[in-house]
Image 1 (cartoon, rainbow, N blue to C red):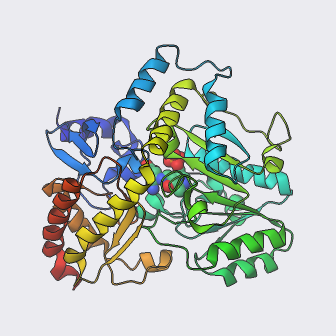
Image 2 (cartoon, rainbow, N blue to C red; image 1 turned 90 degrees about the vertical axis):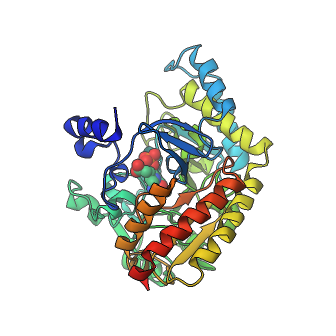
Length: 427
Ligand code: KE4
């Protein structure tokens, strides 16, 4: 069946034809293609097209798709049973590896998605502090947690549902949503809500409104304010964890959160999330403490085997220096095409974003100035040329260890002609 046929059937039985909104191509127009196989840096569509993939299933495919070692580990482990509902040896193995790679994580609990990880961090911070309010930042996306779907990024932003229907007003009122890179706004929030703020949660490198970076001193300032006011500092590293560095963004910026949410890379493509941090806080979790959190498939052996194998291959293969080198090559290759256009290219490690505006882009308000119509034309021109970027201006792009220099050269060529085709729209 063709993508069009499959999508028709999907729309009959699945809302919007997709199991996650960002996949619906609503922001760029047209219909999503369906993939029959993915390998290395490539996607193979049911229509016989081959694409260089810069979405990488939104981050997990850091080694590229279907690495031999990960597939072998999944098959071998699954042959011994897929889930026991009883502890298995790979759970302490994964926990020890995560705690070894992320020094701020003294104890960790596995869950099944990034959403579960951030939701659990919030509940834990509230239980630990006895406070209810939470500070988040406009444009940051932390999964579809009720209280965090307030001025959220990613698909919520793409579909202009940054404050989702179905979230009770009472929940939203407990969420203070502030502009990113504005420490004064955070100081004012603490002053206006003395003793009421349980936590600050943020993406240390926001990558769900495109990709922009924390300004010098910003993360350190948040750390100081949380310490001063007795609030829990939560880094949502679901996307940046184990991607930007072994210890994630907190290693790059040298700022230590109290709790960290993790996901994507640690599942090797299977459904996995995790959250961890100070043992003093983590021990508030049931059965040790009064904060309840649970999951039927949390720590299941197949997902643990996939994640452990992927992380170990990253470590043994020096994956992070390869990712930085690929990212540098990609940025260099794109320069000639973007040099004289009013676009803004951001990159950190293997994550990047090309904003269709002259910038600067420091926060959500800036990001929303982008020419999303021009982005949509660029996206389709690249797709027609064999390159798949995220189908929204408000997402990041990802390189993997599997992207070759030839992939990058090919991509720069395709992107260059795609940019030429929209140059008139943005100049
Ligand atoms: P999941 O529940 O989708 O596993 O993770 C939620 C999440 C939490 N925190 C951050 C920083 C995230 O980026 C995400 C999920 N990222 C999006 C892509 N921007 C997932 C793609 C999708 O929603 O289909």
